[in-house]
Image 1 (cartoon, each protein chain N blue to C red):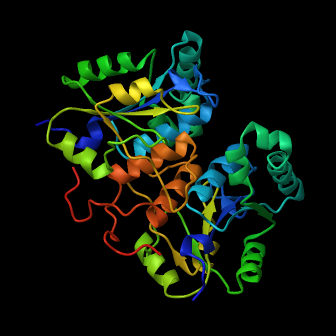
Image 2: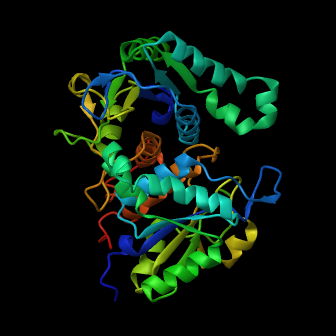
Length: 201
Length: 201
């Protein structure tokens, strides 16, 4: 077994391509500053091993590196040391395949790749089932999140598992990806809930 | 008892004043477009009764109204109907006191006011304790979230209860408020977790 806690060998990839736009066309979305910051802060809160921004366009990867580099300077550290700590988790990659290779190299085992999607496509696993599956091995865990209108079907098929969509008491499921990452990390690694089995109001 | 489900009589207030800045000075922060959108989408996902942006400066409230109004136009609806549905939950108010009065008027009962803070200040309640407390009454629930470096101590004292801070397996607790709102709504109104009592990995 790996000596790392499961959260320490868990990685988030924010995928800017291949994802759908609202017309179900496969596109590359733009990197946004807040996706970098908010998701890095969530990954740091839950003690993850790293956070990959995936973009096939070199200029977008370079932009991401420049934003992250600012927070490594003495100026950035003085501005907000906590932000620098979060952004130190950020890596960039040109493709999901590259992320998988990098994690395999650094962790010495291929990651279990779990795709997330707001579109329900059984079979899906609940967070505790993902934890059990990965916890039984010493493999790292890679969670794929799509920007835009979500990961293409091809990656929902190619992933080892698909996580159950986040649903509340309504049929509306259009969360910002920044919010979805936080909720899923909390479901995986946050405090156990005390209300299991109780009736929801 | 109210005929509304608890989530339907729950309200989020995003407070831009009075909050601390990083030097513990009491300030008013600026409204940001993404706080409006992300949090409205989370409130809509979990079926809440409404989402208040609190700002003492009239021009900031007017800016918020203009952003929301765009999504009520036929152009906004055509652009993204789901976004319009979320933003229909948004209200603006000049102060926390005004939010409390408005909720009391619309719900015919004073809200139970629960403050959130990343700073631990016992006694704090877990999400299931909040649900039990409000579920035993027909009062609405108002969740206060501070922007900047968080709600001032005065409001942590004045609130009826303080919710336990979001912590993961690390001592880092600097989530974006957008992320924190999503996690807390999921803890309150998301699917019950199946891993209660199980050992976390």
